[in-house]
Length: 236
Image 1 (cartoon, one colour):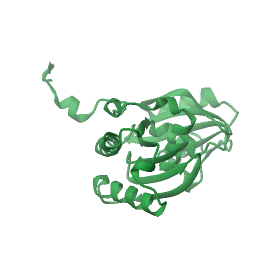
Image 2 (tube, rainbow, N blue to C red):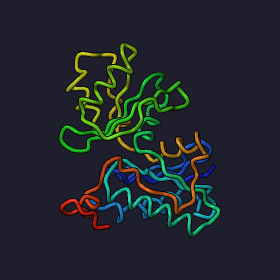
Image 3 (cartoon, rainbow, N blue to C red):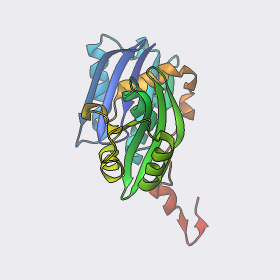
């Protein structure tokens, strides 16, 4: 499949065009601009450089969370818009944590995806890779950093693991500094990469969805939802 993928889940803006597992073009940028300013021009540029247009694509993929509330909405809205404008286009949302695990899919063993949420709290998931495919063995969640570290101790044991995501260095330093079998992924693999979204979709094409069904998986109550309640009264 010819796929366009975009990841706007964090400070990184990433877009990629892939075809049958081959990365044709990819751009990843740590940006101070808002994703709404940068992601669609980036995608348009990549398609042009690859000699493709929207009509020649088979699918569009986005990171659907966890991550930045605004960033996720921008990425999902972009993919929805593309799919609605081109009805033959398959579209899908992929967990940001799963996508991060695909950065390290060549690793045989446990992969721990961890993203900083707020002080002492992380988004985390644990995956197993056989060197080709990825499967989740500790469901994505928002939890205390200590809870994720305990899960790593229990699930990984002495087998070793690779840590990936913007929270991996802190998790390593705080809990596993003396354990050489638990290591951080190389710096260039630690952040979101749109090509990994393509890999995740290629592995499970059945996750394709109607664009109206694409929604963010924040894994926690958003501030907007909290503000809908006042003195115990739901204002929805």
